[in-house]
Image (spheres, rainbow, N blue to C red):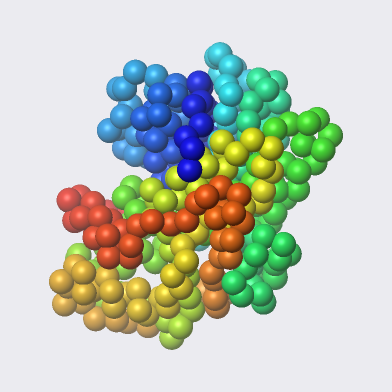
Length: 322
């Protein structure tokens, strides 16, 4: 994959898990980076390691506030819209805010990109496929989403954002692309955000039972964060490519098997405890990444063992806390 050289990038939600890794990678590639985040779910600690580097600026602000986005100084040639509560714990706690960032927040970020003549990339999600009836999921699949279920605030926020991005391109000619990110894991995840990998690791390191939802037979295809960042930036640099493009892991695994692997890799004596499965929890999820391979030359490179070991090492070096 060729690396596109960006001059100046805006990353909304840049203090979040994936957003902070994007900020750091762009800095490494020589770009100036402005991180806009209201810290509703992000953390200043996620950018602490590189906050003092030349070319980085953190701005505490809300992308749903048009003035906050308009007032950012200078011009950008890349706008990455990654602001949004992304874990069930967060979007169930912040349902209206989640819908607002997908609608008003996306509009404000798009308008800034249009004003600056920037490339715009929307972080969408595998959740737009809902509890899929097609497997694996291709970008042409329309999904199976419950529009009034508990997960709908996130699912429909992203589906609306995709429609808005598409319309903005058609009406205004804005240079846009959509990436559909599947379950990503790695350092800087919060232990209390409700997602499987950080939850299992925190429980194992603390010697607590690993709480597996339902019978643990539901599957996910996880992707290490460095590989996800590679895919996102490959799409950003693919001139004329609008997407959507799936970016995600190719190895499908059950949640029960994931829990067992975490126990093994941590050397924990933790047992497995089964708990009630959430409403509308997808039964199977695996992306068809043929388009990413063909158009971007992208595929995940980090093995399960390597990715989980790095993630476990990061959590082990920090106190277990939400």
